[in-house]
Image (cartoon, rainbow, N blue to C red; front, side, top):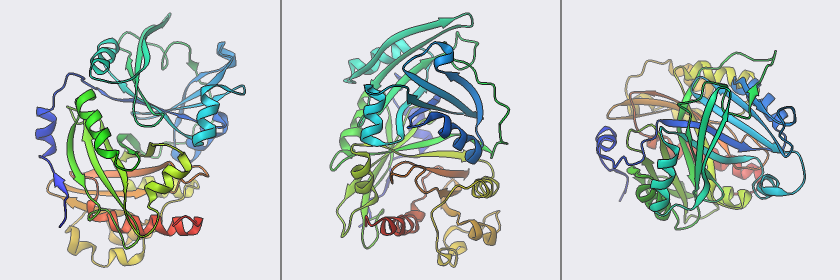
Length: 379
């Protein structure tokens, strides 16, 4: 029997959640990468990000370099080490390119740190005030699953570019935006029997609420399966699905991720758009590879999701998935991994009223992922 549970209507959850930790949104996501300069060029070219800020030798920093990219409300920070040894190299050796920091925009970084630590969070960064002629930023942080951390960023008293220590990144190369708007959600993959541990962490330590859960009868094929719970903060601006493996005939996508990432970590970043056809078309023309969706998926689409505004033939041409809930429908498509290890990827999502996560697409998505796993010899 299916165990999918929509715990309450999400808007009701957002109103009732214990909001001792008001989060204004995702401030930025920082990736540790092997070559930040080249990674920045890729994300600018393929994803339409723009240059914002830079930190490195020219700003007096001798151990690392960071490039800050921006598109509408999305910020990516790409960081590489200059020298051998140290935390960043250890992270790269273990995980390859991947998410290190998911930073929250808050009004009070000190209070955010104190509230989470007293509820059991392991400290990562004590509150730190950094300032220059443009004002000051306060940062603090805690550990979460694997080696991923959450930073709390208080920037209400800062008027400069990004934060102190950075300079404006002047570049003559800024490809046009592809229409990405904000971070919709970030999915974390955790180990066997750890989903409830980490959903409890987000509930008790950060005041999140569970809005949806899926078991292996919902997210499975003949060969592989997983389980997932979707956690949301009080105002609904920050949503984290948490996945764990489930028993199947073969190795699931979560097991493959854990094998190559060597620990729990951020599996994919879902970014929103108001025109997914334009966004996906642009990304494909710029070299981004997406999962293949069989043509048969579209044969009964209208029977399943009802009337939609988009041309089915165009959606089929791009392999865009569609699903509906009680509030509306959504369109989504997933890239292949954006590095050689089969770990992190991106989801492009357009919400037309829907507040869910595409349950009706799980089977088609899993079959597409299994095809890629088979090609890699990992199914």
